[in-house]
Image (cartoon, rainbow, N blue to C red):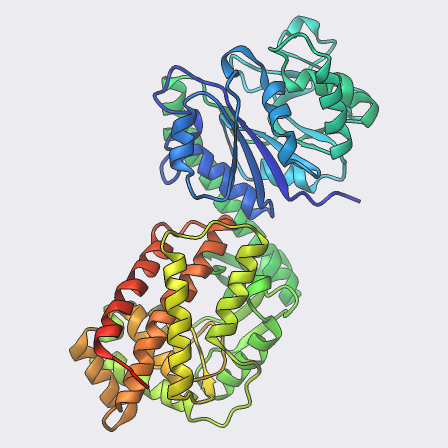
Amino acid sequence: MKHIIHTAVILAAGENRNFPCPEGLLKLTDINVMDRILKILQKNGIDHIVMVVGGKEEQYRRYYENRNLILVSNPRYKWSGTMTSLALAAPYVKEDFLLVESNQVFEEAAVTEVLGSSCDNGMLVTVPSGSRDEAYVELAKDGTIFRISKDIRQMNHIDGEAVGISKITQDLYKQMLEYFQSNTNPMLNYEYVLEGIGRPHGMTGIRVNDLVWTVIEDEQHYQMVKNRLYPKILRRERRAREQKAKEILARCLRIDEKEVQEVRAGGGMTNSNFVVKCRREWFILRIPGACTKEMVDRKREEHNSLEGFHLGLNPENVYFDSDTGIKITRYITDGVTLNGKTARLENSIRKTTNLLRRLHDSAVCMQGEFSVREEYEKYKRMIGKRNVTCYEGFEQADRLFYRLINRLEQLGTDRKPCHNDLVPENFVMSGEGRMYLIDWEYSGYNDPMWDLASHLLESGFDEDEEELFFQYYFQREITQQEKEKIRIYEICQDILWSAWTVLKEHDGEDFGTYGTDRLARALEMGKRYSKSYEHTD
């Protein structure tokens, strides 16, 4: 039975004088080397990360300030080998872990193969890369590591090159530390400790022959990585995702993979979506994203999306697995997703408000309640459990949130069927001009003013556009109470989704400034709310 790994130690103390920054901070195209490593680790369930730094340490500390990482200093990085760095991580490592060297660029398969292997202790091995710093590996007949050396003359035969990714149990790690205590050579590297200490433990060579990876060595090599090797990795990873989607679709629909004619990536913030064609029909395949199992009740989503279909609002679910969250829906022919601009056009407003009235005034029996307080406090518990660092200003926003929730209780709330996630991208106009409402993950009973606030906020309505929207939706004058509730819900949504973003980023997603922007906007809207609605009751 394989161990589930939640911890990683990243060795980033070495200094390469060919660059003005640590190798981990070198930019590829869309991301730097270290952020890419972190994204891969977090995507694969590793949420406790210890990074040992040394050369140009201050750059790492500035860049990762307030990020969910433990940075450990190796002040003797100039005069010590990698085993010293690994030993310094000991106070923060209490379980089996993945060991990763920071000066590498590799495809995600390097990590998934190591984590997915059945061995307890293992080192990733691939064909020799031709770099100037290869660590050759000789395997015993049973596939375990017999010898590691950078001197080819010491090898009886070469089975591959060690990639700087290994998984190590606590038991083996303790023995490595005990061995190192009596060491008199400060330049000792961890690979040679593993070579000796690892033999009794059966340190397995995890062979992946078809792997694209490299160690960054100098400026010329870095340019090659950035311009040729990294784009190749991205292409391979895209093809791997599409192949996975193809396999999942075929399995779910119980058809042969050969019947899947086309797969292409779609959009989505929370999940991975694919547009797929099989048997001359088009579908949307949804594969859930990081940590959505904790955030989303899939049984509720399945029930409510079916109710939405019966109301004529949601496309048909062809397949839905409430355990995995995998969903297949029919593709909306010639569908065009709304955006912030098109959602504010009068024709779109007329269709979206008609759709929302149909939902809010319906007698459908939905599952679940969407309480902004409960949803927010769920995210706060998850943040606390994972020891995640929140954005600056979060404590102030937290106080504002509860002040507004108290005011909502005074105003009173309605309980009607709601969608609860009305970003413009969840509205899709078919080629025939019919509007659909998709992605019912957060649906449930709520106050309809939440839905209105969501759509107005996410689409960027100005005052005049908002007035037109209210005319179409209410078909009467909006009351002051309704307008105040919308303002409160707008602020609470920004705070809620900023907490959501903190968790998603912790699990490896990259949203840029999305979370911090929402938090800043919530605080600014809070000031405007205080000026407009002064209450003494």
